[in-house]
Length: 163
Image 1 (cartoon, one colour):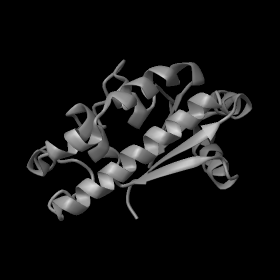
Image 2 (image 1 turned 180 degrees about the vertical axis):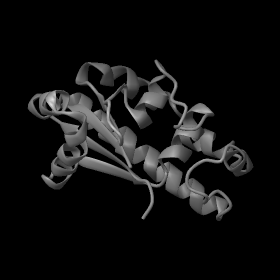
Image 3 (image 1 turned 90 degrees about the vertical axis):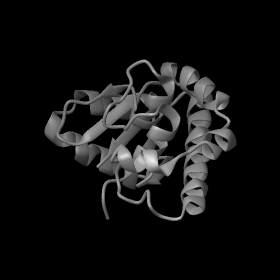
Image 4 (image 1 turned 45 degrees about the horizontal axis):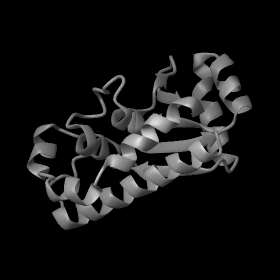
């Protein structure tokens, strides 16, 4: 199955529980929220490629203070073995504004998948059909952007889990 990214819309109570939980319980709490029908978006395996497309670097090297990077990897990373991060509702307007400035058609037109391969992005799919990859990346971008809009409008937080 591989490493996948899931973005959950969580309320204040859920975020507080996560913030107070011991590190060894964070993954179980995140999975429980995922199964509890929290509004969510899954980017499957495209998270690293989307981060690279938007920022020019792998998600393994997040750019602090860059809202496009933070859209993919979150703002505050929890101290645990798995990658779990959150973006608080008050941080969402800057991320939404940055996502809204992206002309995804232009960005994809300039995408060079040889650069994705050279950067050794996860997973090793960047030799696949470029038209299909662009279609998948466009769908992932639009779904994530729309999800952030909803979370910002509803003043909810975003929990990011990549594992």
